[in-house]
Image (cartoon, rainbow, N blue to C red; front, side, top):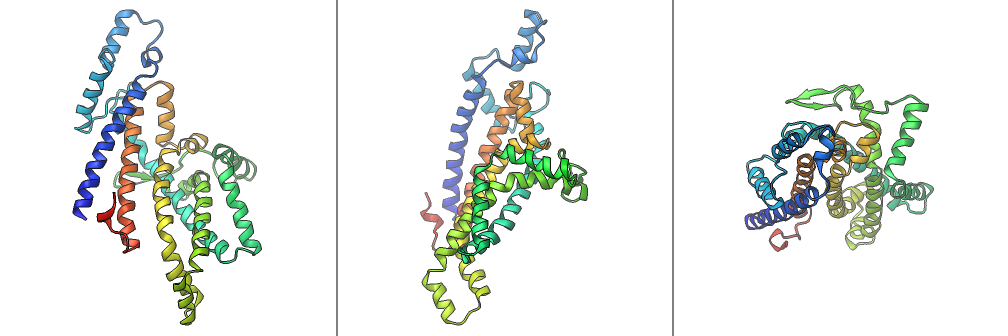
Length: 324
C-alpha cells in the first residue's frame, strides 16, 4: 500500500508539471489582456507601466518559471481584474460549486441506482421500458436547454421554485451552505437536478446492465437455492457486486460535474466557480483561468487515487500493488 501511494504521488507530481506547462502556454499565448483591461485613452507610458505590473513584459518561458516558483508556495498569481490572489478568488466560489456538484451526485445515486435496479429486475415491464426511455432523453437533451425548460416550467409557469441565485445561506466553520435553509434548498433544487440528469441516465444504464449480468451468475442461483429472500439476494449479492463500475464512473463524473458545471451555473446564475471562469475568460484574466484549470487537474488526480483505494475495499481480488 505504501509503495503504491508513493508511486502514485510521484506520478501525480509529474502529471501536474506537464499539465501546468500545457495550461500556462495555452492560456498565456492567446490574446492580450491589456487591450481589454486598459482604457483605449491610456497613453503608451501608462500601458507600459501596467504591462510591467502584470509581468507581461517578460518572455513566456520566464513567466512560466516564475509561475512555478510562486505555485510551489501556494501562490498562483494575482487576478488582473480584481487585484486579489487568483486562488483565493476561486476558493471563495468553491463551496457553492462543490455544494451544487455534491447535490447533483446525491440525486444521481438516489434516483439512478433504484431506477436502474427496477429496470434490470423487470426489463419487460412498463416501468422498466419507461425508465430506459427516459434515460435516453437524459443522454440526448442539451444541459442548457433542459435548464431553460426547468426555469420556464417550475419558476415562470408554476412559480414553485426560484429561477436564479443561491438563496439564504448558513455559515458552518466559515463556509456558507445553502442546503441548510429552506430558501437555499429551493434555490438549489433546479440547478442540481439539471446538472444531475446526464449522470442519472448513466447510473440507470450501468445499474441495469450490472443487475442483469449478476442475476445470471452462479452465486445468485446458489443463494436462491439456499432459500434466501429476494431482498437479501438483491441487496447483498447483486448490488454489492455491481458497485465497482458504478463507483468508478461516479467518481470520475464527480470531477466532471465540478469542471463542467459552467453551463448550469450560467443558466441559473449560481455564484460558483463556473460563473467566475466565464467572467474571467471574457476579460482574459489569465491568472484566474490558470488557477482554475490547475485546481481541476488536481481534483481529477485526487479522485483517481481515491478510486483505486475504493477498488480494493469493494473487491478483495483487486491488488493495489499490481496497479499501474
